[in-house]
Image (tube, rainbow, N blue to C red; front, side, top):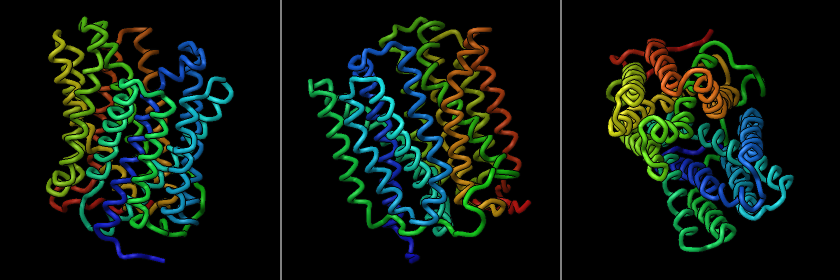
Length: 388
C-alpha cells in the first residue's frame, strides 16, 4: 500500500539515520572495554572487527530484496531489533567466539539498517522533488556525535559498559517507536532481477562513493597518528584532528540541501572534491598542527555533500533497479571504509604517511573531475538519464 509522503516520512527518515550513527558510535565507545574483558591484543581485535565489517557487507545485497518484498518499515524494525539485542552482548561478552558472533550479528543489523534507510531516503527525496539527502545524512553524523558523547559520559560516571549499552539500546528502541508510523510500508518497485551486478553508471557512482568513504576512513584512523608523529601533538589531543573533520562534515551536511538545490549536483561535487584536495594538501604539507586541523576541517566540508549527491543520483538512474543499485553503492562505500585505513598503512609503511595522504588528494581530484557526469547547474538538482 502506497502512502502520501510528507513531513512525517521525512522526519522518520532522519530519525533512522540518527539511529544508525548512534548505534555505530555507541559500539565504538565500548570497544576498549570489550578488548579488556576478552583479553584481546591489537591483532586479535583487528581480526574480530572484520566480523563486524563482513556482517555489514554480506547483509547489504540481501537488504534490497528484503525491502522490495517486505517494505522499509519491517526491515528497519528488524534491523534495529538486532542491533538492540547484540549491543549489550558486545559489552559483556568475555569469550572470543561469542564476541565474534555478536559482532557479526551487530554488523548485519547495522548494514541492513544503513541500506534500508537509504532506500527510504531516496523514495522520500524523489517524491519531494528537491534535494533532501544531505540533511538526511547530516542526522547520521549527529547520531554519531550524540552516541559517542552520551555513552562516554555514562562510562565516565562509573556506570558499567553493560548498563551503558542497555541504555543506548533503550534509546534506539524509543526513537524507533517515535519514527515507526513514518517508515514506509513498501520499498522500491519490483521490476528487474532481485540480484544483479552493478554496471555502467551505477558502478561509476559506486566507485566514487568508495573513494569518498576511503578518505573518511583514513581521517578516522590516521589523522590522529599523523598529528602525533608528524606534528608532535600529544596523544591525548591527537583526536582533535578527527573532531575537526567530523564537526565540519556535520555542518556541511546540515546546510547541504540548500547548496545542492541552488548550485546543482555538478558544482557541488566538483567544489567538494577540490575543497577536500586543498584540505589534504594543507594538512600534509604545512608544518604546523594548527594548519593540519584547518586542513581536516576543509576535508570534512568538501566530502560532506558528495555521498548524498551520489545516493540521489543512484535513485534517479534507470539502468539498475533501486533494490540492487542502492545496496551496490552502499557496499562499495563500506568496502572503502574497510580497505582505506589498511591501504594507507601499507603505503605509509613503504613510503610515508604524508605521501599516502597526498595519494588520497589525487583520488579526490579524480572525483571532482568526474562531476562532469552530473547535470549542469542550469537545471538544478536533475541528473542525466543513464539508461545504458
